[in-house]
Image (cartoon, rainbow, N blue to C red; front, side, top):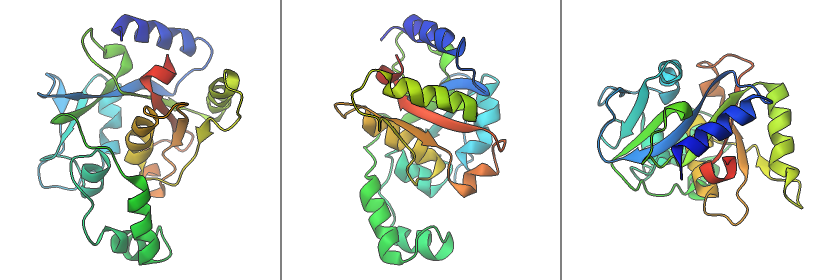
Length: 216
């Protein structure tokens, strides 16, 4: 799809639905982009600590060697969940009542395998011809959320075309909207409802993410 068409669409929608941070997109790449920031190898770093740098024009680049955290490595499709991931979710993070429910969480998520070596998060405005943005992430407040929910249901006979699932921050802005790309009627995903992620964002900022085709 045309990078110029994506940019024109962004400018059009922002005339009516303003964002709190620049719109961003995810794409895959075989080599790191030239303006990339990466988590330190072997260190635990939440990808949301890089959001401000991406908003200023950097490109966050994640890979199997440098995913930021084990959760992101799984949710971005670089690795399989660890055998004890369900126990960690239930007993350490306390996000699920039992270990069995924690295991069911990972079974339901089922991330799609990463099709290339690097996952890149960058400003949508920085898309270049030849890039293939997979997912668009809009950083908005409650008023803009109301507008986006309305638009997401405007051209559909059903009224449930936006979901707010329980998910990690990275699942909500990547894993789930990327999977929606392959649905007949792709939905938008309201995200950053993960309490662990909220510490990295202003309290009135949330996300709506969707496959790029649905954004257009």
